[in-house]
Image (cartoon, rainbow, N blue to C red; front, side, top):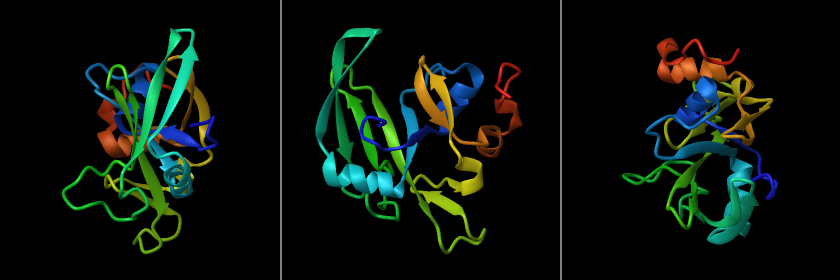
Length: 167
């Protein structure tokens, strides 16, 4: 995403995995990230169904990934009865994927100005999200929300955060 100029950050169980040991949680089947509404519009306009090739030290032969956007990616409301994912990066060889959800300012939210909503039902105050913090996840550069701890406690409860967590 960084190569495309789209800012993205870890969320949900992926952020919890980062909190615990900067790795995917055991048994977690995919990675969840978020992007801004502007970011999802850009991806939908220019990169839907694009294939990308990446190499890194762990994959010396590289891998191909498909970026596929939902036909509802530009919509603010979740599609009724359908997966709320706005986009998905899929490893063409393994089928493993990264789910991409767009967050959008919710101008009618009862919490007032600065509230963001996502089709998966999550809501975030922008001051909890921004400015994003640089870190690593699975040994590669990543970004996380500014107030990750508070977001994780709100989503999973304080017991989900163990002693090995970050401060």
